[in-house]
Image (cartoon, rainbow, N blue to C red; front, side, top):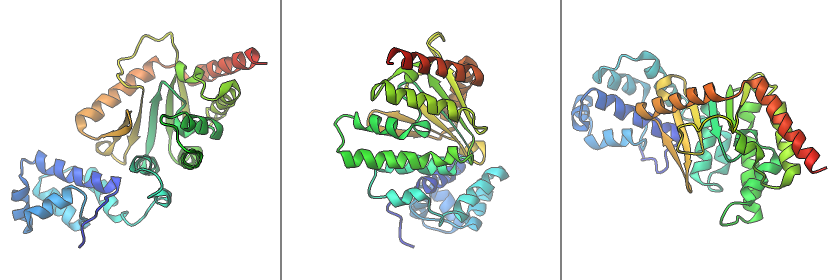
Length: 288
């Protein structure tokens, strides 16, 4: 079997979980290879997502590693059997960077999503005009066709939450509600769209106002992606020009704790809706 040159995010996660399973059992790669009757290099390739495995081999590895977490094993088996089902984001491969595709893949496979943003409205809730303005103000400046491509991709991503397929909780700092990327008109329309989205049964929008004491967060935004089992949850954070993914148990526990603290500090859904409406009304009256 030819080695994959560009494993998908789920293939990489499967490999990472196989490695974690082996390490938790205290087995080296060579030890596991001997028990499986394969070359040690094959173990490395499985754990890096560069080669696939069967469900039968997954269950053999789980038994050798003394893993008795059946829900996790079943979820990993689902990744294997689902490997040939590509998502809509594959249409953009070669046109957008891997970061964009990974975000869409995570969202498309998520069982639940939560975001926290301080500088801008969450991408999954942005209007077309707002998203276009955000991309147009990057540095260095993007050419118009790139702005249009990224905006179209972002609008396509929103289907996962606007369709009601995936429960979504958005925690938005007041700063993001007031930050303007293309004048008060675009911002007011964006706030109106937030109010409409907040009425959807599967979307929760909660505001963290300026009056809340500073939260212990050393980054402006992050996304928490719920997997089919808690062990397969993932957190994503933007860092400079890159996107960083976290799946280690300690990191996941930290992000869960952060979400709990943000949730306890944020206004209720109804209070948040009223708060957003007040900002929108002030913005419209000041620019009438």
